Image 1 (cartoon, helix red, strand yellow):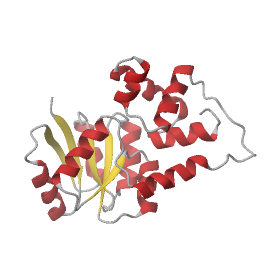
Image 2: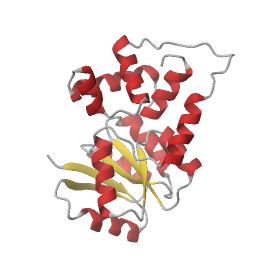
Image 3: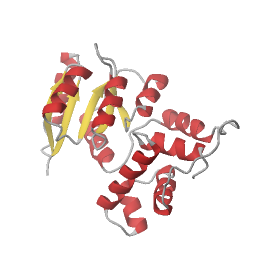
Length: 214
């Protein structure tokens, strides 16, 4: 089965370059192209049979952070990878907190882009060491004494999955460790997101850690 992707990019040259880099991969099918977040959401409203979106972070009308949050709210099964010209930690961190699974620099070569797409769909995260450290620092911040921990009704199995996500395991690795199917892992993760009211693995781990669940 091909991997169906969408590209949201307002720069024609950057868009053309990405298309060229992916044209030699028969497992990738570009189904949608949008020039900004609003246009992307309009197109997804007509056809959301998409596995992953390559999302420019700076677009007119609705930027990549806003669009990512809206996509994950409406279509939580669709993965989002941010495209950017600069390794801007703060902006990219906001995008990851909005639900993005990671990011690519626009100058990354075809191999890197393809690997990122396949890794992300396998449960991985395209993230620089600096970004990973920033995320870990937030996870490790002590919870405010004024707020009381909540359990959010998570089952023991869901808590085990969260611990494995915190340790950086992919969905395939979790399935193997727990002797369950990849599909079952996906369903558990969807339930965890719903109970915690989050849109990404990073948000789930941070919220669970902050409430002393993991």
